[in-house]
Length: 301
Ligand code: FAD
Image (tube, rainbow, N blue to C red; front, side, top):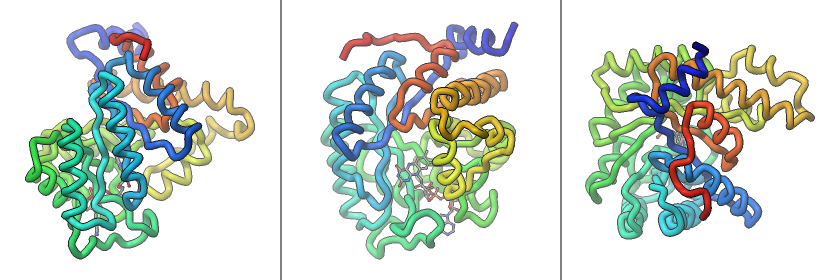
């Protein structure tokens, strides 16, 4: 039996494949159209939840809120709103959390966020703000009965001096009430499993869901990966070599690469995936199909 057949069988068996999808709030009408086409396309796959990011420094506060509310109002999907501590007082963050509670949002992805100067600059908490992601998780817990998800870094966060210090922060977030972690994207599955061993050895038992990034744009991805401390293996660069002006082939390669990654993860026991969709459905839909997911909800809006 091939690995793809094994993965496909898993999806229908006891170890059902579960997925979640991440979107970012659109900045223009055209991007809004693309986002909603993608949500409509992915919706029938019945994800556990769909998350909406919070722009650097809170720059998309209103747009994140509007997108989350529209998902609640117009789809059967469960939204999760990302929230960061950057450049805001505790009172401001608390007000956002309360407004989510009022709107019916029960799931928050709680993050420290990057400093306004961007990743790599030193993070300085707002004097009246939450100090870090663990402090934010505790603050959200105090405001209501939210499901709280946090980040995890198989290759450690660039601010963190060591993997151990990084795992200490994950432990602090779990102790504060986080119930799930989603990883930064990675391309070498061994990195994820090595990290998971260390997390479990530290007594952390929440799900650590692999974050999968189908590579829509290799060049853009490498810039982003450098800033967030994710390594890009030479074999991956080789696969995209010479395709800068060939988007159609790039897409096929991207699907093949992501398929190979998730099928290997399934083979090694993973059943839950978070997809960084970049607001595009086609690659993610294809990978989910390969994993055996089939429409469970009506296709029409
Ligand atoms: P934390 O978990 O708080 O910290 C990460 C690591 O950095 C820890 O190991 C900690 O030890 C170390 N660290 C933190 N602060 C310090 C310090 N002052 N000195 C030394 N070490 C320190 N960003 C957004 O702006 N909006 C989003 O919607 C968003 N969504 C994300 C979703 C996921 C799944 C992931 C993985 C990341 C996301 N990010 C988002 C990026 C994230 O905000 C950045 O990576 C940010 O730099 C760290 O936030 P965090 O909550 O991951 O950090």
